[in-house]
Length: 112
Length: 114
Image (tube, rainbow over all chains, first blue to last red; front, top):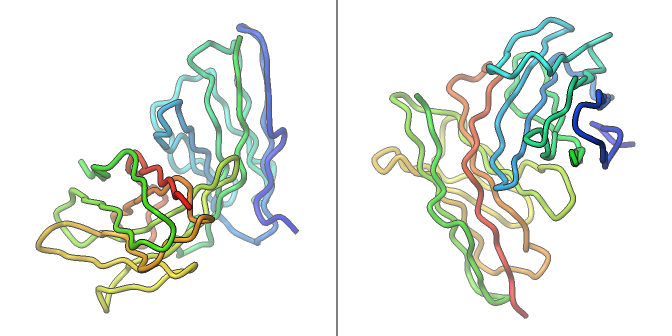
């Protein structure tokens, strides 16, 4: 069973569209994250949620809205997609009082 | 602000050769240090971590890393590289045990020739 799973794996869309990426973890972790990896492979945290509560918001445009319906899920919704949003988005999770983050396989978003 | 530097963007080695990937961090106190590996099309997998104690840590797949406070470094090593080690390697730092934020270096791409 995949510990942290993201869907879809690939997403190709037009500028201006709205899209969502889903993430689920079956590790029983309390904290979940979204990272963005740009074309130069640089990884930067976007958000983290602890037990459905927003903990970190790293000055991400408000077109990006994370939603955590329960502590096993953290979805990322993106409005009005722009060319610069093209990247690989990684979901991760970690246990409470622990610092090891487990990553999903990533979602490659291409905005045309 | 905390930062992580991986000076080598791309390294090429022959299979069976030894490997050292460099990582330097910027932080006033002792950080929590990690190495992750990303195989093509895959997510990141934790290779090893340093929280405290012995400064030489062992990880998976035969990798080890040494924390050197005086040099603010956490270099990753492997005595004999296998073709399957070809991947992107990321060093990361967290400033406290319970912090939610990992700060990553820009990665080093490892290419292995037979």
